[in-house]
Length: 413
Ligand SMILES: [Zn+2]
Ligand SMILES: [Zn+2]
Image (cartoon, rainbow, N blue to C red):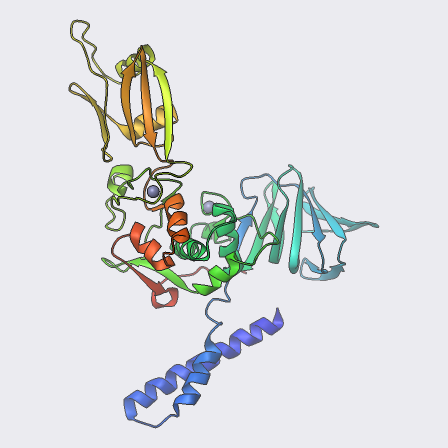
């Protein structure tokens, strides 16, 4: 840790000198050899994003007992900033919250009771015991402190492995390099757009879909981490106002994406309908649901529809393009509400009546706004570049280095 701090300090210092020299050479025509400038600028690369992200792990769990093990290399432990020891490779400690302290035990018995406890290493294996939850491998530092009645567990991890963890949690394995690059850029954009979301709780983001799903790292890092590194520092901003975009995504749009206006009643110039030819034959492109006509009519009546028994009513409905409302006679109802009430996979459906049933034939899966994940995967397989994928789903956007934007990053200690 010390070495990294010294490196960051020096590279920051060198960066300032480099910027100063460039400025001077332009302002006063003082000759500065180009080679020296290049070397100075190169030295500063890498310092920009060696920035730890603080992520709360198992954030919605009331974690009280956990086993922390050293997988294949030792872990360094510090407790209450005074006690230090090492967990040898292949061994573990057990942490339990009791009587307002975190009690740490190893194979020989209790090591001590502490208020703070931090573990550092390349693979920190976490096995929650109470409550039981999935096992995770993290890197960087994992610290534990007491948050009322639970252990607050924070992973301080560099930006690149954090984003790689998110990309893997959200998309799985087996995709193309260009798709992973596109996904890395959207996850980084989300990270910096929401970096103050949990500031009051003492960390940047949580590990759940409330922020971005993050499950630490798994052993295979041969494609996702390189894709994150290949797009280092790149984020997406809107050409209209220069702000980071809301990088919304969903599983499958069914052939046409939805506008933010229709889905959320907020107009965002980059989240507008896009006709998508890439996802329509993939896994989540179609769905069907059958509801009895009586149940359907009861449902509509409950929501204000007036049934006239003397008139034959046509309940059928077509969406060739996405439209916001279902309409029968003069009655209208938002398709969003129908989706929620019937737990439908999407709002993009047509409805026909056959043999006493209504049949909903639907397209896509998810809210449909922004990047269509299955379509983007297919674009990757067809040879599109990551920036083409991004610009296809988000309109009028720029890809820019994050340090060219004014973003306040909360600092913790
Ligand atoms: Zn969150
Ligand atoms: Zn699509």
